[in-house]
Amino acid sequence: MATGKNQSLAKMSPRQKMINLMYIVLTAMLALNVSNDVLNGFSQVEEGLKRSNRTITARNMQIMAQLQAFYNKDPKNGLPLLNSGNEVRNATDSLYYYIDSLKVMIVKAADGPQGNVDNIQNRDNLDAANVVMLDPTTRRGTDLRMRINRFKNFMAKYLDDPDKLRNLEAALSTEPFKVKDDISNKTWEETLFENMPTVAAISLLSKLQNDVRYAEGEVLNHLLTLTNTDLSQLKVNWIDAFVIPQSRVVMRGSKYQSQIVLAAIDSTQRPTVYVNGARLSNNKGLYEVTTSSSGTFDYSGYIEVVGRDGVVYKRDFKSSYTVIDPIATVSATMMNVFYAGIDNPVSISVPGIGNGTVSASMTNGTLTKSGDGWIARPTQVGAECAISVSVDVDGVRTNVGTTTFKVRKLPDPTAYIAYHDAEGNVARYKGSRPFPKGTLLNTSGIHAAIDDGLLNIEFSVVSFETIVFDSMGNAIPEVSAGSSFSERQKNSFRRLQRGKRFYISRIRAKGPDGITRDLSPMEVIIN
Image 1 (cartoon, rainbow, N blue to C red):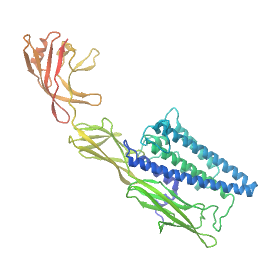
Image 2: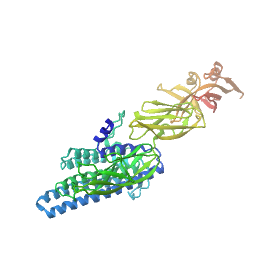
Image 3: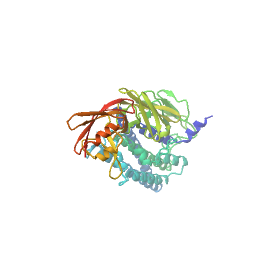
Image 4: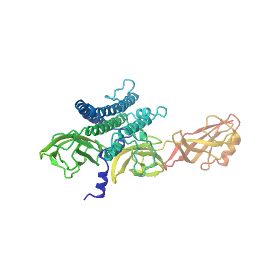
């Protein structure tokens, strides 16, 4: 007796399983810097999809030829079926070649006007798919979704079998893929094309073309059954061996699954399936193998079924699947290195996977979750931080990538005098220009900070000196009271005339990294 999990899998159509895993796997392999091996993997997937599309197209043409032959034999009963087949073929070609045009636009957006879909140069370009499919002015992604929905509704008119209707809905679903605990509200087109490398976007569109041809074949095959054609002693209208994988690309460590079936087989008996010389242990044609290494793997076999005459009929099949290493997106939102002693904001995500299922850890410091992002706080200067990311998919935690960052000491800050300008706003005087004497006397001391537009980090001033020159040209040094002007320093300021200048030197400041450093002196000109 099947367990509850097996019953649940049995209710889900093979095409739906393929779609679910395809979304997880293809998008989980995106990163800020996609490796050449991963891009080559996508190229292999694209070639596999092209071959699959050619195979399905040839199969559908054979069905159309059979409908034409039936019409030639019986024009009265064959004309409605042939007309319906032509309508289905025209609707399919229209959507199929529209998707082709989108692929051309994406490649040209990545490679320029001379871009070639069969020879993509900038395969890792992350902007082309966004520009073509998600531009709010052209709304091509939305248009594609609406065309698919119209096509799906049109094809559904020809099917009355509930199982086939469910398979059609699953194959052409435009519902955005949702992961448990993911509260994002992305559209179908955003889940497919947002921040997607060009080669991955082309593969996804090829998969859509594959789904469209599959739907065409389902409807044409249903029309063919209405001809009541019988092949040999088998109680079917048309027979062939098919391999229906959940995905041809899977994440290393996860399972590859494919459904091996005979099309239009007699439902009163189950065929026997052999893969690589061994008989499958289940009667559902479910082929399952755990992936342990990267690469492309071929497998083949045959299906046997007993006809009404007692003869065993055999059909061969072959297929392949590609395993590529997983990769995650880890990027520092504030800089491309980490600085010791401060909070470094980090964005960690695995495209297509909800943040609730993503976890991460870091060496040489601490990594904590903060809202939708993460905070990295490294410790040892000069060493590397390694951030490892893992995801939970269907209860299985899988490592999807590790990214390293250099840890540097914070740069030296700049000393300044804080004051209020004419509008009452806090301003910073950093020297080398006239400064009102009255404003100077109203300040408490000096400060230090990094405020270069990238970092905004305050330092604590430990001590400093002022050098004032008397009327004889003698330098008179005065020591501060910590970060504040001492009374002797303020008295020396009061004696200064307009146009005179003094210097603030031997400035020592301590940063959040605990390091005390000497800062450059500051020249103050009295106005």
